[in-house]
Image (tube, rainbow, N blue to C red):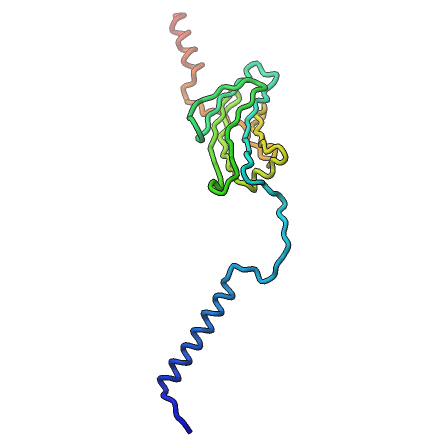
Length: 177
């Protein structure tokens, strides 16, 4: 009977175990699907499709229906809108390079102010199909995003303890006396 060196047996056994582990990990941790499943996405967005985020002023019938807004994407310029006017806040082009776009907007009117965040990616812009125009409506009760049924109510401006009216009243009292 031929005897093998114990060191050779241990080395061969370790190589066999190492080979089995490496083969096991490539099979288990591979990104290849084991079963092919025909999957169709609920929404599809073609490449080079442009989605527009539009804000429209719908404060009809108010004495002061003007609204001012500014967004962090693009030029930091305050824009003033009258009832019925529409502005494009964001244009998102679906390409392989840009995966998402986001911006924060601040809207003011005599009803108060609203801060909201706009996040756009191909999956979300598919909700705006077929026109690819996502619309934020400025209403009497707040800002409404139609495609996701999101509502941002007006928040009142913080008032100081010394309001404008109290200083006017005290000035009038001084002038009367």
